[in-house]
Length: 200
Image (cartoon, rainbow, N blue to C red; front, top):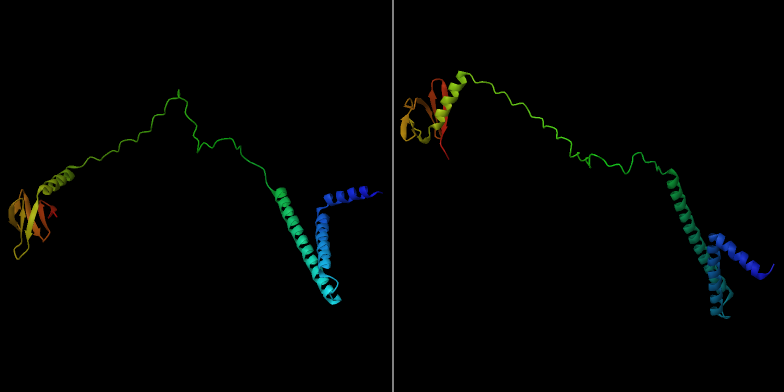
């Protein structure tokens, strides 16, 4: 076997196994560093110093190898995680991705299709008021037409309504004054009372 064949076989194995290539590269760098140190140290160095230096270099090599192994282990763990994720990934799709959701994209109506008639609510049936209710409403409306302009509260209170000064028991437009306070006056017709208040 010639040297060229061995060289080609060696390079082929390095390319096939990257871990071996990394370790070999680290060892080559360490060997070069050791050679440079030996050349620079000279011959005057004591054997003990050389041994200590070689021990330090060996510990550096060990640390470098540990780092290389650690990085390789991390890469392998990541690759394993990625592979597990791909194997456990559920790629089944249960709906048609290209079918539009009609809630967001309503289907347009055909122009020839007649519009449905909008549903109309039946008109509310209002109960017919009885004559008593009509009478009470009329009396209250007449009382609202009266304007309380001022009041004077004393032993005999008075109120000015529509420009007339009235006391308790006096009448105006068919209403009797039954109560006077500082801010209001109560008038009465038949059995219906209405309160007039001063305007602010």
